[in-house]
Image: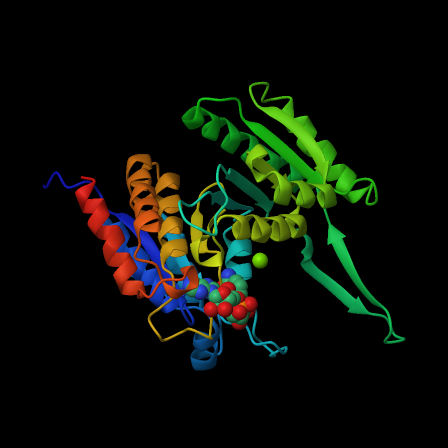
Amino acid sequence: MSNQPKAYQIAVIPGDGIGKEVVPAAQQVLEATGLPFHFVVLDAGWECFQRTGTALPPSTLAALRSCNGAIFGAVSSPSHRVPGYASPIVAMRKELDLYANLRPSLSAPMKGSQLGIDLLIVRENTECLYVKRERLEDDGDTAIAERIITRAASTRIARMAFRQARQKAKTKRQKGLVTIVHKANVLSISDGLFRESALAVAADYPDVAVEDQLVDSMLYRLIREPQRYDVVVAPNLYGDLLSDAAAALVGGLGLAPSANVGDTFVLVEPVHGSAPDIAGKGVANPIGAILSAAMLLRHLGEDAAARRIETAVHSVLAEGPHTPDLGGGATTEGVTAAVIKRLEIGD
Ligand code: NAI
Ligand code: MG
């Protein structure tokens, strides 16, 4: 018997386009932490659909269920409707009940990022307009989309937000703040239910401050004063929009990580897509995927290793090298090697 700790089983789904470049980069960084990992590479996406007739093979889903977590790159979606094709990321969120989408935005030490921002958007990941119940009326001129908000989903996403705020407050040594986002002045029934459910959860977290804000003024204030926000909880669509805006404040898409979290599983992914315009050139920014890998470690309870990766990334952002999206001339490989080198120096 060896004393080697049991390896974490991590599913790796590169997907399409630059997913196939940035996910291996994140995998190398995970390996460089020295923690024991066993990686299981799985197939999904548009190329997979073209090859096999399904974008998410049952074998991928079955293998995922036996892993501790997953890292996903990106998939391409056809711009027109293709019979039989459905986005695998949406299907995975549903199948694995990954009900929370966590999207942190942290100031980066470089031009193009504002200072003093450390916020986390907790986006509901299963309902709202994304249930995709759309139809065209018989006249062909009226389109209707249903929007579902339930007390159960609103309550569990609010619990996630308050837990995250409590956790964040510990490391920052200050009282956490949760901002509940809604549009209950217009959608008084659906957004009213979201707001009411989230406020009911707040009562269980007296150590965390709470406020609620209309989504339009929230977006305005996010742009004007991003530093005042801590944890923001929102229904699916508002969370989607707010988190892209927040990413723009701290250096852009190439840097933004995210995690899809359920009660028993976590799947992390960079926020960006498959970027067909730069795919295959070796210049995709791997930082979004690398920071996503750090989020995966945090969910596995490996906080120290997650922090080491974040510190290494911070130093590469401050000193370079940078990929072309950040105005530099480095390759994906060059930036990844620089992160790994700093991880080793940090040891
Ligand atoms: P995109 O995020 O792929 O690209 C937008 C722009 O940002 C492009 O100019 C791209 O070159 C640049 N960019 C993105 N990530 C970058 C990185 N890591 N380094 C350097 N530059 C980067 O979004 P777009 O163009 O709207 O979509 C392209 C494809 O990706 C579509 O098929 C879309 O459906 C899919 N997509 C998939 C997502 C996912 O799998 N979760 C999310 C968003 C889009
Ligand atoms: Mg989006």
